[in-house]
Length: 374
Image (cartoon, rainbow, N blue to C red; front, side, top):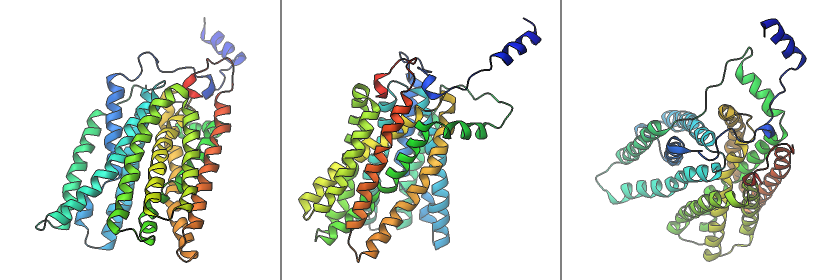
């Protein structure tokens, strides 16, 4: 066939724009993951472990501007530049077992949230000859090792995106935001990230307001992180059987209800119970919602761009959510009621957006139905 005949054929039958629902399985589901995929999970574990740690530059800070540059700007940029590729690599390597792989990888954040603060506290309180600067530097060396491990183990099975006539970012922005399943999920994740960190910031001060000791109040954060490990692992295992969207929706509702139940807490035992439940459902929903978001990408080599755009929007929620709740507590003379209601309702509304997103993603009867999407 001549070039002219080929051009005439393409003019009569132009290629249709690929939608996420047209993709049955871009990855061989019988051979997904492999050694490179599971090494990417190790990399994600190391990166998420680091995000709850301290930068080794912190120990060098002697002025406020140094703290702002090291922990605020440099720390934020480095976390964003490492977390997004690591999360993308895992999502590109798995399809049927994507939820389990992402859940296992993100357990690093829970383990880091337990180990690093306790280790730093031990270094500061149990080593009289050790200065604050060197205590933080030791933590920094630990994070350096995990960062190097992540750099060695991370890889992707996805081919590079072919260059086209128009800039790739512009094409992806237009294509992604026209897909309701993607836009709705970004909105859902935005609302959940707006409120899901409230327990981490305000459980200790709430506990002290009830007369609970300072030590026990601080250990509540370890309890939340410990419970989230179970939520992440169990959620990844269960989602393969009952469907990832079902697990995300149920865990989001559970987190919202648990947060509203925080209103009725008046003693130490009740607060520990609420911390365990919130931590469990927090771990489940936060480890799985990016796995559902990856399903909207029309090809594995576009998962990174879809993730990056979503994380750029969601970062605004993470930045503003805690100050908003803090302002609520201050406006109501130290009462946590308004902030807790804001958190619980925000989590429930955000979770509700996953329902129409799932319905849109499952449209198209020609595509073979996958149980793990349900």
